Amino acid sequence: MDEYEKLLAEAQRSPATSDFLALRQAYTRSPLFNPYLNAASIPMALRRAVQQDDQNLIGAGLQRVLQEDYLDIEAHIVAYNFYRQSGKITKAEYHAAFARGLLASIMRVNGRSFETAFEVISIREEYAVMNALGLRVTMQRKATHIGKNYDILTAQHPQTGEELDFYFNIDRMRSFWGSKTPKKDVPTPNQ
Image (cartoon, rainbow, N blue to C red; front, side):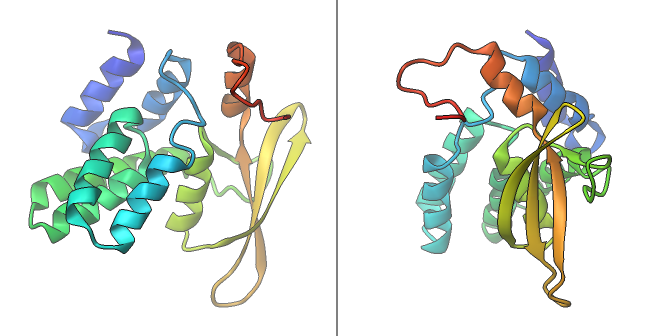
């Protein structure tokens, strides 16, 4: 059992007391890490099932997403709502605690500058943070600052209309491509 599997098992036993920052960092060092996993197809199918309120598809979709990537914040939020509506409060609270732990491990800083950027391990984490802040992304751009790579997401404040920039350090995602030899049919970020 590698470090990631050990920390994941601990978090699954007790999400309220787990070190989610260490868990996420260990995941990036594990052979299972792929920041582009579930980038579209499975989560989109899960979102459609939620929109259609299809309980069977939601349950199956959750199982599939979490089997592929147990650190998917959105899946834990969907699971919380699914189990709460199903009356399975203990399971709902478990997934709520897992989602809170993952988000808290990212949102230790305010993300409003290069110096206080959120460190993320997937694009999906960027959007989970923005959703948690109640913001809708209006623009995304890339930047490099002092040798580090960033996504800068712009959102409009829902009450004031002010445009706000949030900075995400994406070095862990970028290092994925440095540690892998892309196959012919897998596009690199520069293609």
